[in-house]
Amino acid sequence: MFLLFLFSHFRASLLTGRFQTRSGVYPGVFYPSSVGGLPLSEVTIAEVLQSRGYVTAMAGKWHLGLGPNGTFLPTRQGFQHFLGVPYSHDQGPCKNLICFPPDTKCYGTCDVGETLLPVFHDEKILQQPVNFTGLVPLYQQFSKEFIQKAVTDKKPFFLYYASHHTHYPQFASAQYTGHSLRGKYGDSLLELDGTVGELIKTVWNMGIQNNTLIIFTSDNGPETMRKERGGSSGLLKCGKSTTYEGGLREPAIIYWEGKIKPGVTSELASTLDILPTVASLAGAPFPSVTLDGYDLSTLLLEGKKSPRSTFYYYPPSIDPTRGIHALRMGKYKAHFYTQGAFHSETTPDPACHITALLTEHNPPLLFDLDTDPAENYNLLKPVIPKELEPIVKEIQNERERFLKSMTYAESEINKGKDPSLRPCCNPECTPKPSCCRC
Image (tube, rainbow, N blue to C red):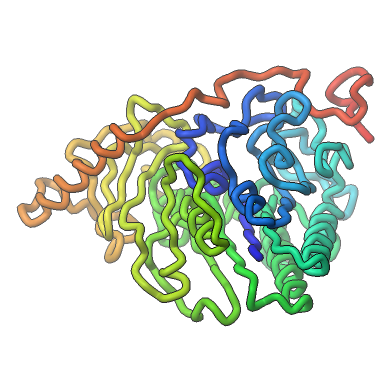
């Protein structure tokens, strides 16, 4: 049995074990009217496990495309059951956020011209607009019932819970609103924590804790532009939409009662590694495609070194002519390009801001992440020290190898938009999109 929690872009990579460049999920993100989506030819974790007799379900934020007649919904990508929103909950007018108390003004503007946010149950719209005071309890009930039925039916299961928390704009149900000293952001984080606790409690109540792997992680750093509503990257540099550590480095908790020895590790791992690791543990064959992830099972179960020694940093708006912006090899990280981002505004460091334009570095900037995780001290300034020449050359060679080996699929996001694809539970109504209510 497997439970995977993801909170808060790199969903395509997580579900396929492949860089999003290979599937065309770049640059940027999908919108309600996007024509493209995660190609059906891509093999997801859910499809891998289904081949081994697992029942599969997803709750929460999909954001890998909707398409004509739900072409790209989770139910077409290996998930037998789905309860959730097909894209991000800020991709609609904020009035679609029914806050608690109901007359509370929502924070922000969101995408005013889009359709009201829907909740799908499998391939049908259950709610439009979403009632956010009851959304997470709805997800909890769906997830708990799925686990309980799978155990009763003596079926192995895979549940992918992709929380909206703590993405902007924040919300929480009545049980959590006003209960955190951290305001709305804290309330949403508190609700996420409560949900994880409820689902883990379900695992224990069903007596399957010794046979269930639980993975909890996120997919990008905080939106520091939101200030107290956007989270903090601590000592790490910058935040979301940058290739500094604050933009991409995330903690993870991987838990398996009686199988994984409790402890803390700083071994290098990526969400790309989840598919091959889960497939290996389930005894499922790997997809017959190029995988960018590694099997971490010996790291988890035996405490061995991670098979991953390198990581490649793509920016949100990928340009195949430039490729990766940074590369990590062991403890060293080299930046070939740097760029600030709107999402990383308000921090004291000007390198994080949108005014920090795309800059090429030759030689690259080089940081020792063991001693300088904040990326403050460039080891190659003003000149390359002789003792670092071999590592710089090795990193540059690895970059060239990676750039030559990477295949860029046609961009699914650049396939354009069609307003008629925006979901509407009352398709004959007018005027759209404001009439789409049920």
